[in-house]
Length: 93
Figure 1: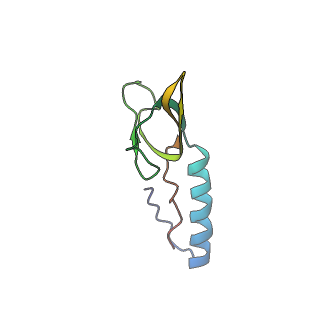
Figure 2: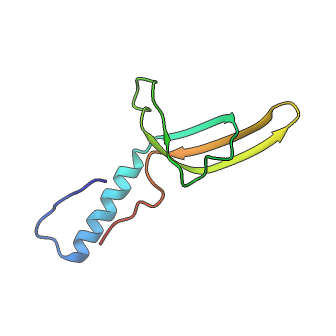
């Protein structure tokens, strides 16, 4: 959540400014890709908290996709792609 107060704008100007701010914020997004042992608990409505790296990557991520596979050699695995902002992020009028 990034609250902004910009006085003196019409509703249309405020919406345009909010959309510009949203594009600027999401342009700085962090992305996460991981290949892990699979489970059937994690889904795209879950959040993933990365901790322990001591870097800017330690934060909350929202999964875009989770692909599970099973093979004789690899076993049951999942491939996760996630980013640090919710896919439901929209400009509120």
